[in-house]
Image (cartoon, rainbow, N blue to C red; front, side, top):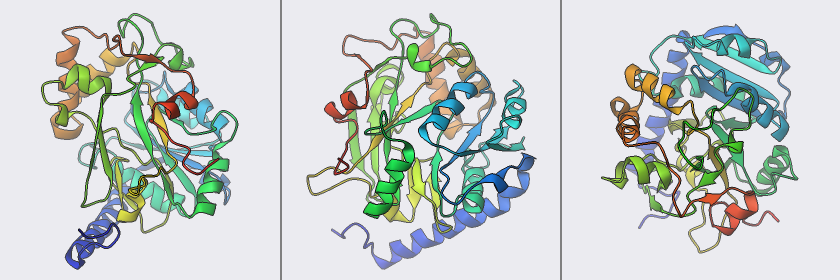
Length: 342
């Protein structure tokens, strides 16, 4: 077997060509982005940046912004994909947000990744960049006592340019629609439960990343074929360089070495989790909207599965569910790791 990082020459050339294509594509597709509020001149050299694509997430944005401000993000770069719920107006008023607007097809622009790759290329170079959705909340070892720049300083000192976080679907006890989520509320006051096990891991030898599936979405919506369930592996935090590009959402990157965020020798490398607050009372309305728009992967296959599953009820809680406590609980369960970050 060819060691990781030493692909056969044809594969290395192919990866290089693909990376150059993705960067070039992002540069060309930037023309559909229209500046609404450009405050990027305020970005300081050591600032941690967040990159987000959103559509109609007004109810989520206040808590999302406060959460990451408290964690240590200094500037947010948003792409608003033709929202009509007032979220664009809200973001435009935030002093630490730069905002672009587009009504172009999310699907035709690689599900927004062309837009994000361009903003990362233009503004992210030399910064630690966090790329997340408005319903994703980063948890990492010591996050209750150490800000995000403590983690990035350690990653810099360790020579690690990327940090992984498994997506952990959170859900309430009882029906998803039974507890109304209100603007500005901590979503995990409601969605406090998760699956502690029931995950499968495989390796993509071509790109070198792990592929993780399972959890409540697979259990509830893809039990007929678990291998078609959503991917839970993510690499959301990267010290960006102009040569980098996300290949598929934040699941994997090029160059390939950025995906080597695990230890194959029997040890562990530090990792985190993205608490996923999808399953709130807003879920049914959001799913219906996205199913109608058909702008997601595989003709919105995932949202078609959600719609079908909701006809049978929307309770994800089961007898094996665990109530979330803190990052130490996730470490005990093997869902995150301190590695050698003491």
